[in-house]
Image 1 (cartoon, rainbow, N blue to C red):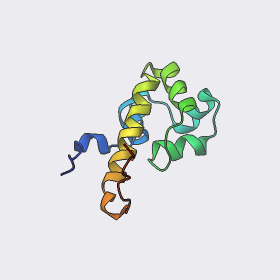
Image 2 (tube, rainbow, N blue to C red):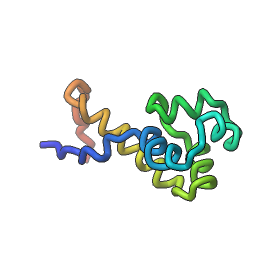
Image 3 (tube, helix red, strand yellow):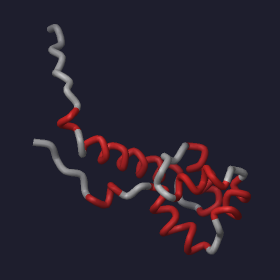
Image 4 (cartoon, rainbow, N blue to C red):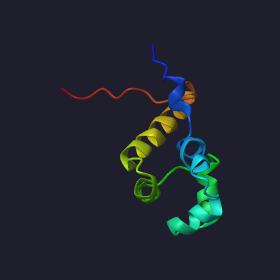
Amino acid sequence: MALQMHPSLRVHVGVWLKEEIVDPSGYTTKDLAKHFGVSRQALSTLLNGHSSISADMAIRFEKAFGVKADTLLRMQSAYDLAGARAHEDEIKVERIALAA
């Protein structure tokens, strides 16, 4: 029996950043992208939950807002795993028996 992941782990890190960090800061996506030195499209795609956060982007958020890059990357990993677990029954792989 597989353990279910807590629903809070199913929050995309970009959506969380937008709701908890970016929107309250008052920065627009365009202004924040300029501050970060990235394209508005790349930042928007992340903040709308359509792309994963990279280590580079996580460091940018850490430098700008103080939220640890490690935490953001763990959030992304937990979200990705929760998504994979949602359809793990479709993944057909047999266990490998190791030689003694």
